[in-house]
Image 1: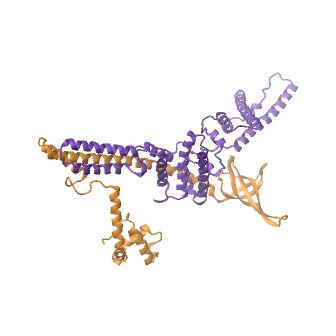
Image 2 (image 1 turned 135 degrees about the vertical axis):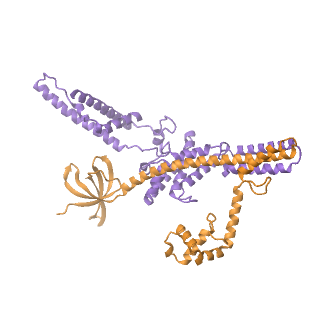
Image 3 (image 1 turned 45 degrees about the vertical axis):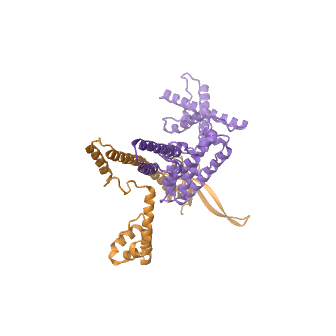
Amino acid sequence: MARQNFVGLVVSQGKMHKTVKVRVQTKIHDAKINKDVFKRKDYLVHDEGNLCKEGDIVRIESIPKISARKFFAVAEIKVDKGQQFALYEKLAQEKVAQEESQLVKEFVSRRENLQRVITKIEDLKALDRIVHTAQTDPDASREALVKQINEIKQKYNIDSWPTDKPVLDLELTSDKLELAEMQTRETHIHRILDALMSDENAGVRKEILSKVAKKNVDELKPGIQKNILRKYVLDVRNEVPIKF
Amino acid sequence: MAKEHDQSTECVKDTANWPFRPALAAKQMVPPNATRSKLKSLKKKEKRLKRQVTRDINNLKQHHLKHVKFQVDPVLGNPSNGFIQRVREDISDQTNLAGGYTREEVEKLFYGVEKVTLSKIKGSNVLLESAVEAEQHKKTAVLTMLNMRNTNAKDKRLLAINRAKREFARVEGDTGSPEVQAAIMTVKIHLGMDHVKQFHKDKVHLQNVRELVQQRQSILRYLKKVRPEDYYYCLEKLGLTDDVITREFNMGRQYLQDYKVWGDKQLVKLSDKQKRKEQKFTELQKKVVSYNQLARANFDALN
């Protein structure tokens, strides 16, 4: 005869050696209310390898009684949710430890960036001062001043001083440039898309689509391809691969 | 009290690795010239004591199983948590500016302003120098106003919340996923607890923090249901543990007393019955400690 079998949820683990508590739920008919109701019963179950974790769903099988309350053993683990949780916990610890070091690096680089901006401004101020003395003070030695000016110019890639090109990129100007770029792309969007959809640029199109699309490129209909490309082109962070 | 508690838990836990059983405490040493009746009574005594020792130890074990402590502080989490440390650094960092401004941009702008002012001045060096000094003065004034030390609590909180959004966002610009919500609540809880610690009479604030703790618990419970992998990542990052989220918790006076939010203040008054129960428990602990000592002594004497 087949042994008695149940499927249940592990509700307690780690408190007793080689033993887990398994909750089994069965439906029984209540004669008084003439309705099926759920009945729960907890069994202490033998778990030889200490494998189960809280949250697992297991099949248990009856065995000869091995202690006062233990007459079932784990036959198989059906859903290893509890073990998966334990694994996730371990993975999370490693991931966070890795990220921590990355964040420290970011912090340091932000500090360095600030320092770089400040020194650049100081240098530019010094450049102004040197130019001013060169213009006003007749006694100063020209050679030394010119050498200093050239040094600073070379350091920051400046062609001439004073210049009408922007020497420092402000957030304000970068936003303005972005907006202008967005507007030009929007006006030329039809031309860009037509060019991208033509056979000449098939390689470029495929490259973009394989990077952005969730599906396989060959499965996409042309209309959908076009829509994805439109979204890609209108995002200013992406570069447009063709000239327009 | 807490120290004693830990000591006794250790007593229970360690016994598994000891070479002897604590029941050895009941061992009666038989003198060499013992009569038969003496021998009989000693045996009887040993049997009775053994039962007593086993019962006491099991009772203490049961007590510990019933009163499991949280692994970390259920409100503030792990004190050495990296995320919270970064938030606190952000708030106290002098290079961060209030009102969403960045130091780099301010420096650049003032450079431009200075340049424009100087270009308008035509004349002696004295005039130029005084203009430079005036510009410097302006810059220092603005930086002082925008310094994190001189800004209000709301601004500091905004800075901290922005960091939480940045660190927990699934994609750039994500402000509503459960992870981000939980992180923002954690920031609010930490800053709120700073206030609560300082002003113990501000009941409204305490209640707000309490509600935030419950809300965080429920949103993380939801996250566990839908995306368990992200849930554990989020917990680890916030310095919390699974039991803090899944077990029942109320930030009541008992919590405030246990975790010493306002120092060693007694906030919960025990009834006579509860006091007796506590007393019974401490006595039990002492008993078990003495059993273990006695068992060790007996073990050494026998071997």
